[in-house]
Image (cartoon, rainbow, N blue to C red; front, side):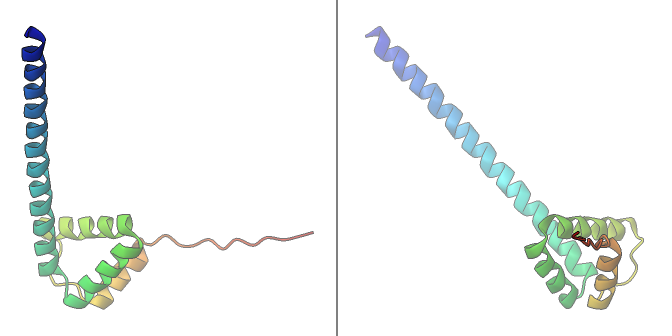
Length: 110
């Protein structure tokens, strides 16, 4: 009898822990979604639709690089150093400056 009560208590505690984990996970997901919505709102303000489309395509190919560019643009906008909206041509220039130069490798066979 005593073992049954102990087993039920362990199950109850496990269930409570799982429920708490689920609540925390949902809160974290909601916080991440809200953060991403704020980022997208700022990007909509500082980028033209064409530039946003280019950045979205870049995000598919090079996610970390695109996110770094987004972070830099957002920081510039929030600090007030970015006065005008960035069009596609300006974004291309920014990306060219930030992209490391490719080194050409030649292999000589003897």
